[in-house]
Length: 400
Image (tube, rainbow, N blue to C red; front, side, top):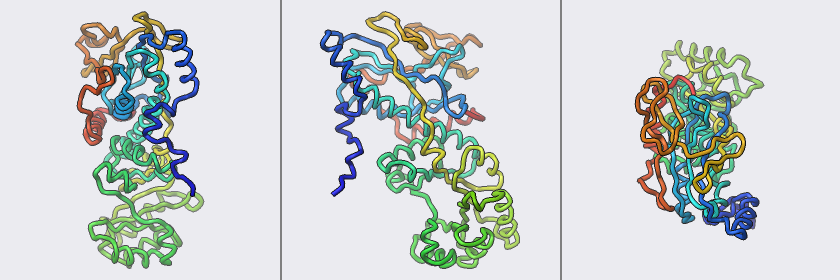
């Protein structure tokens, strides 16, 4: 029998440090042999850029990092920006912003750099792409349909990032259970093909599926989209709540023209209440182009295969002495944020007050101590609380 978990790391294996890069094991062995594994360091997580020409990113993954370090019983301190914060990768002077800091003996956490970065990079990447789509779609519905493009084991982590960034729903049953929301979706082409057409499919759907579930027809399987919309209306009449277009690129032509034709047919029949949802290879650009004539979008690969945020973990202090490799900024830093002009400024970590360079007012310190000697210090926010925090920040943004 094939073991499905053979190529999936278990929680125990991750906690044991088995998902590290081998050179960290060798480094730890050498340092231990030279009695240097207890060297005290200050290490920062930063990134040199944001994908897709982005100006800001969404910082996600902190909860999982803290859980990992706690379960692994690593006696270190962690300072971090609040999970869900939207911010640039550098301050107003071009200094790389530290999103998370580890303080402790290097040998205690060396082998956990790899999983730490993996947890932060992937989730921040998906969340950042999802927020860009949320802003592009304005008030239109956004659904996460991309889990089929990734290993099933990480489906919930993809959908969680999308939901935090403002998506209205997810198609994955398990993700919906974990998020405590209803799973959302329509019907596949296979259902329509087996039944022989959209009319037969909708009659079956209406017969067997809970009336609380919206009747949304997929209208591009066998015939012209406009024809299948009329067939859907004929099949279930007033029960038809919406239609979904998943037209392949080889048949798409002008997607806008197709939608306009459908909207005209619906208008002639006094059914302008029928919602129009789009899916299939959608991007930020296509949403911007079609948001004025569509009611919602199902997003797949654009978010599930989002470019990661390339965070790196670098030592910037050894035994209280500021030091850094080329391209990094040495010494302990705090990040100040000015509510008035919405700018960020890196300064000395121990400075009593960081003053905004633009307006001179006291800035809010963004780095807070969240772990003390391996123990999580505060109650971690729920997924819904992080979502609310992200959407509140989004109100001030026109783009990221």
